[in-house]
Image 1 (spheres, rainbow, N blue to C red):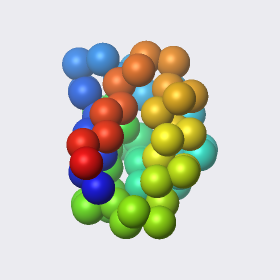
Image 2: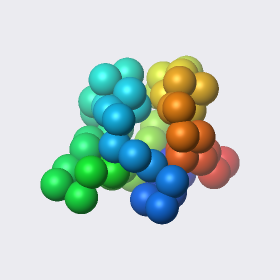
Image 3: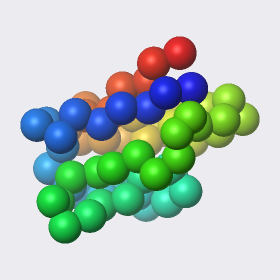
Length: 63
C-alpha cells in the first residue's frame, strides 16, 4: 500500500505517529513523513486508524 501525507494540510500534531510509529514520524519540518514505503497490507488496520484519527485529514491511502 502507498500512504501519503499532504504536507500543506498536516499540522504535525503527532496523532498518526502515536498510533503507528513504524509508519509515521514528525521531523523538524513539523509535518508527518512516511518512513515505511510501501506499507505492508498486514498493517492496513493501523493505517485506517491513523487516517480516521487525523484531525486535519492529511493522510491518504492509495491502493
